[in-house]
Length: 313
Length: 204
Image (cartoon, rainbow over all chains, first blue to last red; front, side):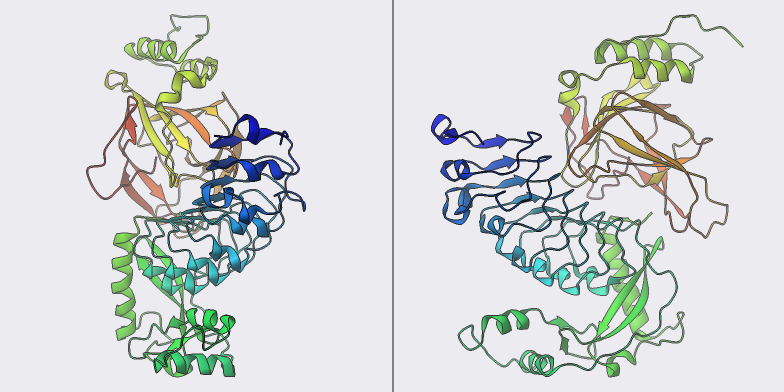
């Protein structure tokens, strides 16, 4: 960036330096008090100096709303970026990301997140902590599973997952009440019934966490280390209506196929908190007419009505 | 076979001229696919001329009507954000011309599924269309999926359909099952269309 940028253009709101071969953006950025849109796609950013130090203290941290860094060479989300608290729209499409940092949840105002075309293999459950997220693009990556916590993204309207390595989806995906579009093509979604998978007994931490949650043991952030407060917030409810339990990491997993408007059959992974919970679901027959089967059909037809564009095909 | 009246190839030097020549061509009883394709390709995309129709949507691609060809054809501009794509679809017995105005679009051709198809649909071919290229398809050629595979550049395309149609079938790649959908316009003649119904089946 040219030196003196902020002196010549102190009122700069939109800066587009896309396609200029930029390898780093320096301290000139820190003195632009009104900048709300920064477009720097198709450059050579990605190395250590890409974003200037002290970004978190600069006016930019509060003023920047839109940041486009697509088509660069980032192999991780630069930590400095997570200090841009006012960010509403972030694009890191077409970079070399292998993962998403859990601290992505710091970007509290994020509404639009584009991470398509990277090498991402997993999604941290902390991504679900973004309360305003409406559009999430994860297509063209190497994602093998979706954490059930993603169903906490209450504002999500569009989820792009095409061209990944998904074999099933978490059943909780049906809880995304505002989801209108879901793209799933180009995933090796299982088409045949899959037997129950191995059940690993819960850890002591998990058992304690379950007890705290199911018995409503009161706790405050001052009572526990921050890591445990976070852990407790990641509890998922057991979908078995007869069970009031929760689970964290240890659960029985079972795939059931759920029809969408009679058009698509999505393999949904049901996470149950214990082997006892799996007994209502008959693992032997697909055409069972047990209570749980019709529960699934009901919730599917409701979800299908909401989800207008399940783009499997 | 009748000889075409014009022996030289058409050249459209502006979008307005393209529309005018299209009206002329479609006023005749017989229209040649090659003639229309050559005409569409001859127009060198100039964003100043079509920017008013190029309305993007954050979540999906948009269809923006430019001209309704006196009922003989529909000319529209489609705007594809990064990663936006269509489902596999047919063209309801109409001719479909697709010219790239900006960026690139990937077209994947598919065979029609078997009558009682219950398997993965067969991919015939795929290609990436560049700026100013014009592709043609109709139901006898097959089905296709169109997508902007770029994660950094939006794409804009100019489509001509004759006769016009507002419903088509979309196909599930995994099973070949089809589903009829109604298409809507995001804007018409440069004006944003307000959606009347809550269900938007705007697929193509």
